[in-house]
Each structure stands twice: as C-alpha cells, then as structure tokens.
Image (cartoon, rainbow, N blue to C red; front, top):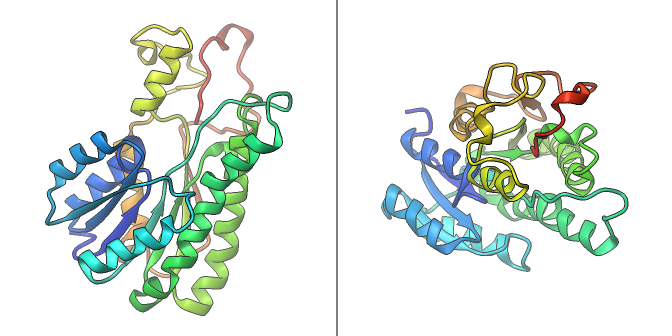
Amino acid sequence: MRLQNKVIIVTGSTTGIGKAIALRCVAEGASIILNGLEEAWGKEVLAEIGIEKAALHIEDISNDGAAERLVALAINTFGKLDAVVNNAAIVASSNIHTTDKVFLQRILEVNTIAPFILIKTALPYLTAQHGCVLNIGSVNAYSGEPNLLAYSISKGALMTMTRNLGDTLHRENGVRINQINPGWVLTETETKRKKDHGLAEDWYKDLPAVYAPAGRILKPAEIAAAAVYWLADESGPISGQVVDLEQHPFIGRNPPKDTTTIKPSK
C-alpha cells in the first residue's frame, strides 16, 4: 500500500473530489481526518471508512481556530500528522459587475487564506514526519472563465502560494508542497449546479467535443488516483510543482459559437 500508516487531513471530504481522495487514501493504507460542512454526508463517509481509520470534523475551515481543531483531532486520534490535502473551496459564479469586496473576501478566505492557515498550523507536525501538502487548485488559476472571476483569483493565489512555499518549506523544513489543478469534474455538486441552471438530468452524457474531446469529463476518482502519487513517498523530493489534470489545453481554447450552451465550472 502506497500510503501505509500515514495520517492525512483532507478538507472538503464529505463529498466530491475530497471524498474520493479520502476513500482512495484509506484504500492505500492511510488514516484520514474528514472535514466538511455537511454533517449527514460526513457521517456516511465515516461509516463507509470506519472509525478505526477516520475521524470527522464538521466546520467551515475559514472559522477562527478551525485549523487548530483539525490538527488537534489528527494528533489526539492518531498520534501524528503526515500530510494535508487542501481541497475545500467555494465555487461560485461572479464577474466584474457582480463581485464586490465582501464577496471576494469570502471566496479568498475559504479558497486561499484557510489553506495557508492550515499549512502554517500543521507545519511543526509535518516537519517532524518529513510530510507533505497537496493543494487542490483549478485550471481556472491561469486566467479563468468570465463568470468565475473571484474563484479564479483565489485559485491563482493558491497556485502562487504552492510555488512559493514548495520552495521555502522544502528547504527549511523538509516539507513538500505540490498542487494539482483539475479541469471539469463530474462531482455531485457540479451535477446539481448544472441542473439548477436548467440543463437536462443527464446533461453530462452529451457534451460538445470542445469541452470533452474524450466524450466525457473527469471523474473524482481519477483526481484521487493522481493525488496518491503526491502524497506517497514515491514522489520523492519533488516540491513546488503544479500539474494540470485536464484533457485539453485550457488557455486560449475558445469554443465555437454553437457549443456555448454548456460551460464547465472547474
């Protein structure tokens, strides 16, 4: 098993990509601290994994003291901390006209500042284990879509933080920090979001080739499979790296006018 006996915090792990990462990590031998906002969903994931290999903490990661509580739960439950996966994020539509100061601050607090605080809080324990951090970003970090302005800003900042800390903390503390940028992923929330936008129940089964050359978009389990490499010792001394997980070049990929009815959110 590639993550045997490792203890990993995965934020936003009651659903979607975070849940898939948590389940895959446990399958690879790790113990997990689950986190999210949805208590019922969190309890379902905890029951699926079992209390021997997981503990659940329901809280908004941007709350004061949330990082300290997550790290304390890991230490008190499993005695150490080997890795942090910063996955929790708000994906919200906005543009220059609809993004005000309060909205932008809220997105940054959850998507960028909270991951930073969790890294800082966990650092002494990660240093002791020569551990690592994996940030879950987005291909929107590079420029983003017109209707994802605030989200794109927050993911661009997260990517810069990964590059910066991936250098300094690796040299000074022996802690690796890397990032994966998923493209469009078929999560539960993405399925619901598109239905709320008025699309058909099975909208994801017939996507324009410009968005899904393979005929489908990514699955959470495929993101989780890639995450394991960065959390495992096999990734060696690599740090400060960002890997895009998408099936087409994102920047400069402008869809034809007849394929704009369905647009990706991540």
